[in-house]
Length: 156
Image (cartoon, rainbow, N blue to C red; front, side):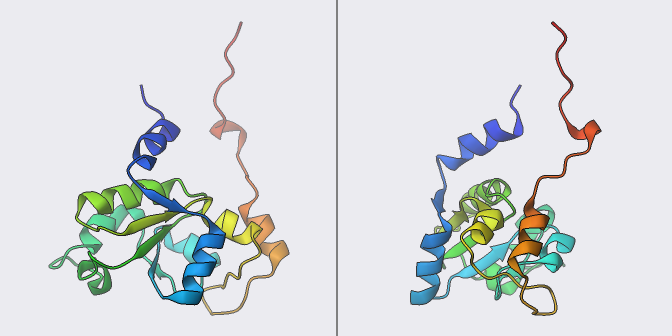
């Protein structure tokens, strides 16, 4: 049986991943579409300024015309450079892989996600445009697993 990380690893062979410092350099030269595929509550907490939010759950229909979820910038952007962003760089690999299957020739994934972007000390903003301070970002991206979310221990 495959696990989440197995699926991400398989898809990552088909997806170009860029590091935060690569994205920083890219943004100084040109303006790709920054596609944040996290859930709206995650996006509202903090995101890269100028990114658009299309949750992973509606990505496929957002990339096509004639759906309520259609995002024209995506539906018309199959030849554009699109950097897909999530929290850690795993969901973005899966989303970029899916977009490639849909004909998006230059869909890239931000390796390490927003966590890595923040660790690289790049700016994040809240939904109201206010800049997020580094301590708040660090606290937000710290893992917080509840006991029931951890894998059961195998008895020996």
